[in-house]
Length: 81
Image (cartoon, rainbow, N blue to C red):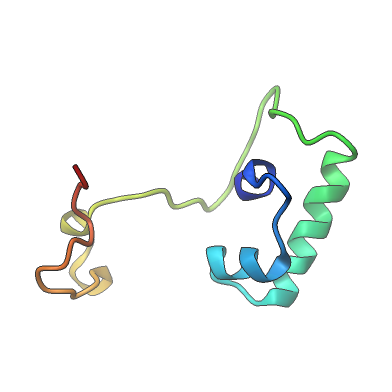
């Protein structure tokens, strides 16, 4: 939803698929449902908003060993100043 409403000219199903890691067909379906739910107005959300199964952020150091991206000394998971 965030990607859809923050893109100036909208977002393609191909771009959404790359961003969220699903197939283009799934992204196309999701976009259709979101556009239908929003109607003609793409404004800020109001009221009670529920989002299920969302993962937001996290540092590499805080992840389980089997989920870490073994990137050596790369800047993954580090703050950019």
